[in-house]
Image (cartoon, rainbow, N blue to C red; front, side):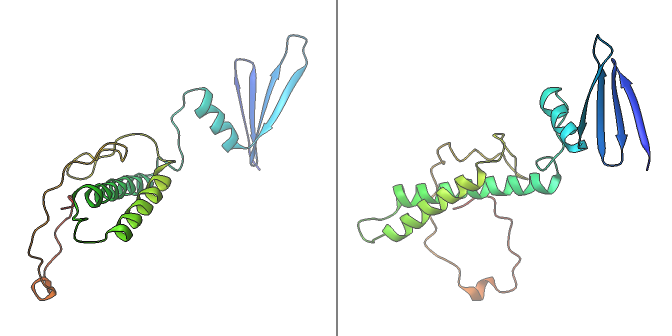
Length: 162
């Protein structure tokens, strides 16, 4: 078992095993001590001393997943807006589709609730947060390709929902 000891402004920090012992003498010569886990010490350093956070939101795979989740939420909001404002409600009953789009929007909002409120960029263009209104979509094409036309084709990178 190794012990590391450092002194900084009359505070002694000793690392022994898996714990950190902080000791500070007072003006009467007595000392006060606190035994902490290193992660607790790290938390206080991040929170009160302005230390750069290291944790679940700083790892690259998590940042990538957060960016993809925001992009998905943006496209779900776009789909909801399109069904609500641009679909043909006169000739078709779209209540089921609209209710599913509302449910997807609520789920996406819940999944993104704990993510930081920063704009993320995709590989091509920045994505607006889901609270902003979606841009007006272009009308959907009248002709849809049949599965025979798609056989053997490489799927293009999809960054915009039609």
